[in-house]
Image (tube, rainbow, N blue to C red; front, side, top):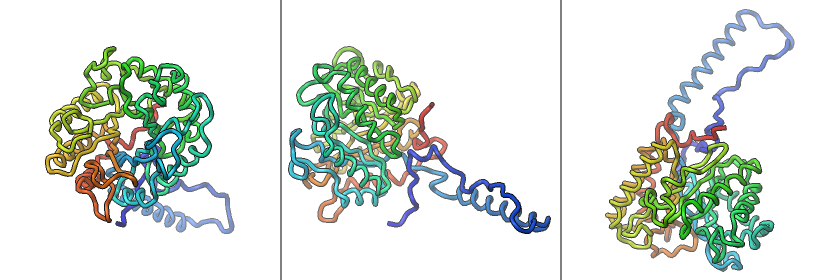
Length: 390
């Protein structure tokens, strides 16, 4: 479908006027007469007026999309020594193109930390790093933002973070090395970790702040997405599940010297909020959780990003999906956007949450997601305007 070129959310903050300021030139040839000067001024004024009028009438000028997209799963599959395209895979161009043509502008890209950095504290694996870079290049070729997502649950192999050798220092080292490779690249955001769990909030906060400090120390000003512990669920954000304090209290201690981060939440609509059941009998709890964290974000002057949410293709679940999208669209001053879970070239068609097209046909969830994409937000309150504070 033909549509206007999407302005990248990371570029919005560096907006340029629709005309260039005239340069002062020296005399070249004949001097202008007063009449010629007056005529040129009128033409310039008319041109400027047309430019601003066109800008005011443009849907992209009056309204702007937030980060809205999908997780493309596959690179996190398999064991650390897996063979690419045998045990794990990166997104194909056909898949990336499909979601770009649907109007999505963001891909969350899961990958396995151990495969990218086989030895803690050592350089990143050249071959795997190149595969990751190639995937980012492919996604950006289609005009989309990439969220880099080490899909490790606050573990390295079977060692929980903060336990040797997976120490704070090791986590900071990993992020420093990865940040160097994508530092200040427009349209690349850093998701610190997928769904930390089995770790108390104060311990996770220390790890997150170590990673943020490492990223900023090497000069990277990319957007950072910071999850909480306990699977970073919206519904449990204010609950002290593991002892040590609730995410909603402890994670207020996040420190970013340029204040360019958002809290990443995940929220599913089944009974245990795991996303592993096809029945959405936890919709009320999910909607309440989303509304509660929306209030928390606004009260504390923070921003949120829904990194994972997904439903099966039945009427009750699709209605719940719409409710979640409506909450974020109505509160774009605090919600930067979302990435649905999930799609990917290797996802089986029978997987309930899967939105990968099958035999050229859209999944039912895509109709609801596409409707959500078409609901733009006021530019004055747009999540796309978020930029570093310093």
